[in-house]
Length: 465
Image (cartoon, rainbow, N blue to C red):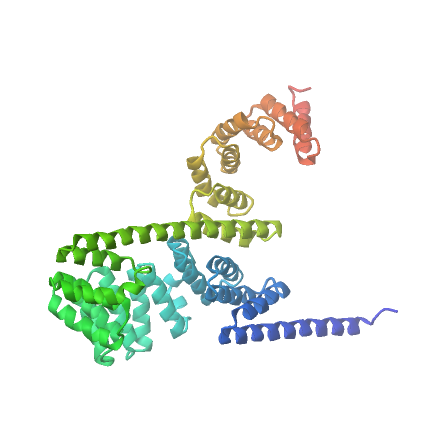
């Protein structure tokens, strides 16, 4: 027996509603775990949600947020790329992506992600908290015009918030306008007297102005609110060195020395201080520590970059195997931002773009491939394909001929050469290339179809009869 049409429709509707209800439960559970800081549980919930609803940007967005909070920035960026693609109308997705890319040091990609915030209407759609986050991201990227534009929007919403004046001061300082920077920080201090962050920034401004006594007094006041802050201790020591108060500088630097592995400039300052004091051996000892720490940091940074590259390429290959081209593209873009000389990433991006409506974007990656290795077969083959699409058949022929030097038996290349010669009106050469393509890949029906179509065209022409 078959269910009545009405009953079947009712069953389908109920199933759909049940699935929606389950997705909402998983989303709520993930959010609760995220709020509690239970990141593995949150990641598991959002991963499940993404699998249940692969076209819903929420799963990708919240998974990206959770991964970012757990320190897995590259994985987070891949998820947030997909969230931004599936939900472009949600500015929070672009903001989260830009934030993660900025933390990865990928300024170019971060600015692309944040491009939509050039529109005032998009800014107004952000919550005040997200606006503050956007301003901090712009500041970290050192794009001061954009940061000030966001501050102007924030000041309209919260005119009495001292943190807005504080960040405005930091932006002006970054721009090199010390007058406006000082005015903003002093305005913030009027609203929040004794704030150590404001006092630290004001002290640094005095130092830049050469007002060392005022700088020392202000920084000491900041230190009274956070006694063991290494940056403040170092800043006071730096001022003391400028005042030629060597013993006092050493006193503050020794207090900050436990943090020197993370702030190697402390070793440098100690070396300078002891040399000024006349203790050359002690100064040399600290400068040696500085070089050792810099070497360790460089090795650690190199190892981290290599590990990031390995993770990115592994994830990108997996996404390609799963047929998820958009996520793979996002990962490869991260990889070339991290290492522009990564051949596989540049090649894969060129291939992905050439197989998409955005094929023109392959050009930048093709240029990079030729810079890395101008004689490589794949780079020249893909370049020939690109110029064929551009209908510049002379350029396409040039690159195809270069590729043929490396792999003369490549069937796909021979077929492409056939197409190029056909467009150039060189029918005999086109026939030869199509025939070679079929010879080297007899299983390719499309190659055989191209050959047979051209043979029929030749036979049908007056010359061929």
